[in-house]
Image (cartoon, rainbow, N blue to C red; front, side):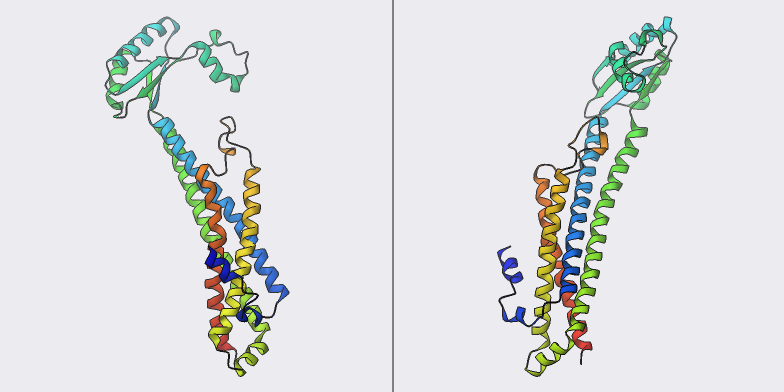
Length: 298
């Protein structure tokens, strides 16, 4: 990092003095680097947050299942007892329990309000099942339930758990793809700015060649200047992005996916790689543009 700062401190060096300051390209490079770094921080935050979300959904639902019992009121307790008896003799079951009516009322409260008359509604009974690490034979359990408790349906949440996890994984991939697109756009804009600066200073370049300056020396001067602009612009954009992420709502179960879109723990160190990467992109883009333009300038 110290060597990078020394490389970027070009203004007091001989190479730095040969590049005349150009307001338009300087502002364009700084603004581009700052804006792209700001977006890169949010892309990183989105990618890491969706990764945590996918892991949380996968872990929370991988070992959980539900048995729903739909039967006439006079048969409900009989079938519930049969289901509990089947679960007690089924390998792979860590624990199970029948949900009380008060718990079902709490589950339905956010949808139907707190005054829902649970006792008057023909609601099914629910049995919460927690599997062991080895898991349970779902098909075998369904066959036993269909025989001993025809109104019971075993749901291992696979139907809706897999799409949620896949959606979170795709969002994480989209965040990483966004980072690549941001890097490509940054390289393109800095290349255009470097080419404009080189074209505008064509006369200066010809004079430098007359006094013996080689193209490598001239290219190095432009590369260092634009790399520095890319680094400091990205540093500003990264800091603004971090403050913006800090202003987002904290993780909340009630808010679901709309909250917690930030970094966690050591993840806050990841935005710090944005300025060095922006400097690297600026270095490569400017070097390519400088060597190409110097071959064109006679």
